[in-house]
Length: 475
Image (cartoon, rainbow, N blue to C red):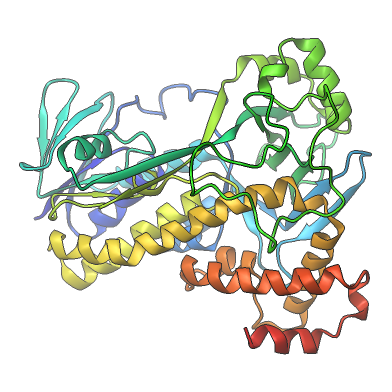
């Protein structure tokens, strides 16, 4: 029996353990943290996950899709909250049955660990941080002083991967770039309404777009909402539109984020950064001005804000992902991304699906499997990382733009009339068979054309959709 070591018992590592065990491979999983089933998960860093078709496909293959969806809340579109409190729903798709699902990160992780432990060939080792990896021997050194060895090692230990850092120290040709947005995030909370359950529409991803910043809220199965405020770490860059020191961080483009009629800068003295929210008075002044309809729903706003940590938002790109069949980086360890397309977990789950297909094809010939895996996945990981960065500006800026809203309405209408038409969002989210790289190229071309059409026409009912579809097919 072939044997492997997995570093990281998070979502990707636990899912991978199940897939490998189903192929009769012996698996040892080493996790730096304790067993999350027995310990309290840290608050403030658990942005809800949007489970969509690519992730569901992976769960389906191990028989866990129905179980997880039974505890998910379907979201059919983006509910946009204007500054005056008005709301407008922008559907994700014009086809029935296409929606994303809000799931608990911790709940899903626990379910995967429980499923993996049903296999006698899987063993979890908690409180076992990896401190080094030997690329020659293919062995992992643990903080306990012991060494873990197997036929190969899978590094699924997240954006701060110890294995990746060890590879970088040992291989001169290894390239790794981490780029952080100037914006960070803070997790907040809307509790369940004791009288009627959900305090706001449950079947939507709520967005308060404010051009320089935004807040979102995702529903939880218990009737509460997890809110996330995305705001610049520091004041002083009023445009708020550029990542720090990287050609990878996009400012947005005409295809999705040229918000018309929105100010380029905030009024002088207006709060635009975390470092300007220093006490309860400044916090409440900011929220009452920007998110007034949400404030009555957030009784623990000040406590949550000053207790929960401020997280960073970054994109990690590195290469190569493997060393001669001895180790493979996957998930966030290989391609961490910002969360604005809701594809981080879905992409990692797709990593595992593709890897499993290659094991089916090549067996435990790890060198061959890893080389082909890298060729297949790198171009697609790059594509979804780019789209995730771009979608930050779409969510923050363009969703409040009338032209963009008309474009989304036109896309919905096209999908309702022509089932074979897919918007870029639908290609990414609901087409598990379509590579991210294809969705990006085709979707960006469609977006540019539709934005131009909707900039020239104020009423989509006056647009000849058959003519539009013909133009789209000609792209």
